[in-house]
Image (cartoon, rainbow, N blue to C red):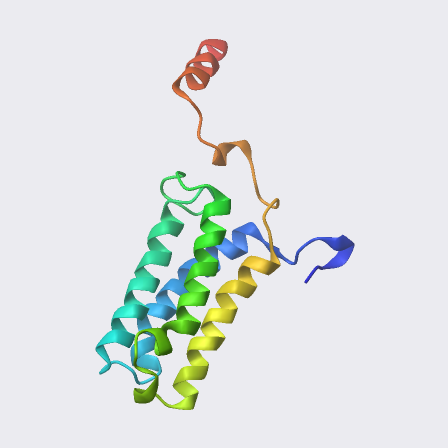
Amino acid sequence: MYGVGGRKMIPLRVHNALDYVLGGLLILSPTIFGMGDIDSARGMFWFLGFGLIGYSLLTRYPYSLVKAIPLGVHMALDVVVGLALMLAPTVLGYRSLISDGQNAAHFVLGLGAIGLVALTDRKSDRAPAYKTESAEEQERKTKRAA
């Protein structure tokens, strides 16, 4: 799980970019894997895909719009997405409607989401700019600069 020097192998910026790729892949998965006619499968993939993109845009890491969600919460949500993918066919009752290959796609995508969390170096690419500042801290910086 660890690379050279005992550090995890995937930099945070790469994880960040892959979140958007995985979100898009989840949205397209019903079409790619031939499950577009199964409402519960399609809805689950769309919900998780748009959800992943949404909370990624709100996470305190490099490629987000609003840095509101702490990284630990984001990583926990990634694990929940992975588990949901693996359990969805059984829990949502469409396992009998999909092939073994389609079921395997759920597991591969789910394990991929969880694996990404396990292999990401959370301390890489962090900078003070990714932390939210209070209004008082911003005011102090402005006064010092003037």
